[in-house]
Each structure stands twice: as C-alpha cells, then as structure tokens.
Image 1: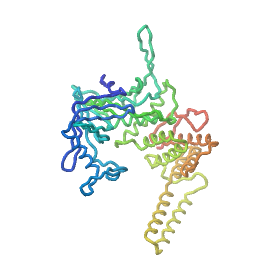
Image 2: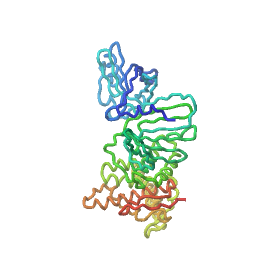
Image 3: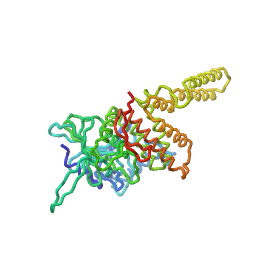
Image 4: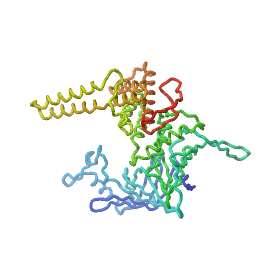
Length: 475
C-alpha cells in the first residue's frame, strides 16, 4: 500500500520547516558541528536548499574562524587567495558535512555530502546556506508489507498508454484518464500523469526489491522512450520500513529526445515497447554498481549530444558503437577477425609480423630511453588495435549475419568525419542526418544483440521509418 501523504512532496514549492538542524563534519581529532533551526526548500530552479540559522555570542568569531580555514598564514596575517581557497580543485571529502534535520512532524531528514555554499553574519546570528543532492527519512511500519515503490518522474513524459479509464465528475460530466499497465521481470508497473509530473508505481510479491531498482527503471525507460528520465521523489516500502527520498527537479526545458527504438502513438496496445523494456531491464539488473550501466550511460550522452549540434551527435554515436563492442556478450561474439571487402586474415598476420620485425630492429639500436619507450608504446598500440579493432568486430558480426553492411558503412563514414573535426556543409546536412539515423539503428541493433531482444523495431535508416521485425541472436 503506497502512502497517501507522498503527494505532499510532489509540490514544486516544497518547504519543510525544521526546528532542529545539525550539520556535522568529522575532523582528524574532533568534530565540526553547527546546530540551530531553519528549513529545507525547493528553489525556483528545482534545487534543494538548506538554510540553517544559529546564534553565536560573537558572530565575528565565526567569521574569523572561517577566514582561518580558507586562508594561509603569512607571518601574523591570514591571507585568502584563490589558491588557498581551493579554486579549481576538486572538493576533498573532508569538507563535506552530514545533515540531520527534524521537522515539525517529528520526521528526521538525513543527507550526506553537504557543502556549505554561503555564510551570512548579522549581529549574533549566523546563517548557513547549502545545496542538497538528496534528503531522506525512514519510518517503521506496524506490519510487514510486500515490497513496493512509487517514483515521481521529472516532467510530463510522453509514454504510450494502454488503458483509458472513464472518470465521472460533477454535472453528469466525465473525462478519460490514460494510464499504462504492464508486467516486467516479475513486477507490476502502473504509470500515469499527475499535474506536471509522471507517477510510476511498482508492486511485487517479494519482501525486498533489488538494490538500485529505481535507477535501473529510469534507465530502461530512457532507452525505450528515447528521453532523459530521472526521478525527483521516491517512496520505498519493504519489510517493516517506509523510506521517502527527495532529489532536485531536473530542468527539461532545453532537453531533446533520441529516436526511440520503436515509434509509438499515445495509445498503444501492442505491448511491443514493454517487451523491449523488460529485456533491457532484465539485462541491466545484473549490474551491481550504484552508477548507470555503461550502455545507459552512452544513451544519456547521445541524448545530451543532440542538444548541441549534429556533429556532436555523430561523434558521440560513433564512439558509443565502439564502446558497445567491448561489452559482453558482444565482446566475445565479435572477437574473431573478419573481412568486409578483399581483406584477409593473411594481411592481418602480415601486419603483426612486420610490427614484430620493427621491434626486433629497434632493440639493439643506441636510442635515448625516452624515445625508445615512446616507439615501443606506439608499436604496442598498433599491434593491440590491429588485433581486434572496432572495424574488425563489426566485420565479424556482418559475416555472422548479425549486422547489416549498410549500417556499418554509415558508421565508418560518420566516424571518420566526426573524429577529424569535420564541420558539416549545410548543403550536405540531409545526407549526414540520414547517416546519423543509420548509425542510431546500428546502435539499437547492437543493444538488441546484447540484451537478447527479438521483436519489433523502427528502421530509421530508410525513408518512411518502417516498422520491422528483429530476429537475430548472438547465441
């Protein structure tokens, strides 16, 4: 059962008053603690901000103490410079505080990696301002519940719906509400729009949900929808605990979208998209790191690159294809050297022998050690790259019938142009736009091979963007 009070945190003007706030930082032999009252708010830009006010008998002593922290001693004088203040340096872990804030309802909010961004001094009042990456609180439930989760996703996300619900209103009027309902990986998913947000609920028959499931869900949606997906509010119920987590709101005003692997309409009862969603989610659930799965990371970069220019998108797409070829199971499947045109394994073997010959000749020469190391490293790189290059891997996949030659040729054209800083001729924009679409399809096919997907997809490499069947498997 999901909490009815979760909606109070959906408000863009979130404001939590806290009579007790503590910021704590561990030092080598002591602790740095600020205690007082204040609030946690969501700013107009969607960021979470803490404001803590505390009284000091002499606020100037706090100011001088802060100056001592930032500055460096030069005789009896403390001097603050850009260098001493750490301008341009990565903030060390020792500078972060931990937050504990109790609101008027007795909920204890916690946050880590809190960095004070502003200090104000007035009479005996010291006010500290800090930006928060996330706040959370946990309460105990009276009984065990089946594990469930509710996510508030940033923005009104375009999602294909498969259910229309008739809702009666006053004066004998009614309206239809669109929702999405499907099952994937043993979980029940419900998605609907609420005001300016998208609400996603997950129900299960288990006691606990996998770690980082909320991240993997957003990653899978990101792939099938071609949109950058993040959550801003989360409710997790499992065992005898309920946890609420709140993050900043993502500003999506300047965001663009990637062509989704399967084009969809507002009402879609085919379930093709959610079949692809399940395949992708099942694959990335095996990833145990807190960060995005490598494939999801590339999808996010491609989406971001589209906001810049076509050249940026082409470069990111071409590098993403190379990266996918190093991820299992594609890495193993594509390791055997292969050939597209008249190239042969003999030519590759000949190149290897020539590199070995050059290395044997360099060996006895009286060379400067620095030059010798550079030559040895350079030849080693050529030998390593020539053994199984990205092109070799793509050729092998073509020979196995797993990729289309036309798409690989498009990648080759895009890669060569983008990697060498080629500025697109406006008269050739349509040509390169089509090449970029073809590489997008190549990228999707590589993802299909990786996750073992067989089903519908949209072929953006051809005019008309025809829906086709993908039925290739890497095993």
